[in-house]
Length: 78
Image 1 (cartoon, one colour):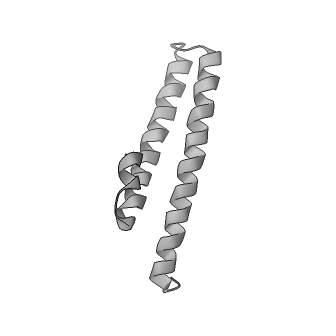
Image 2: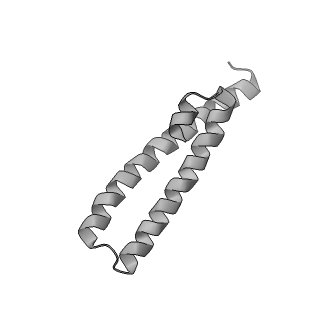
């Protein structure tokens, strides 16, 4: 989806990135469940969590960027 968002209309990018953020949150939830039921060990859980958290930070930054730009358009600052 992020690949698609990169080539999408500006108005659709925020929606696509928000959907990706929801999917990432689901991945984090499933990872935690796998760890809790001992399907993966602590080392793997930590390693995967680091990558997912970094991706979450990037997605959050993009979401804030697009929300800020949309707010500017609404208020006429752009």
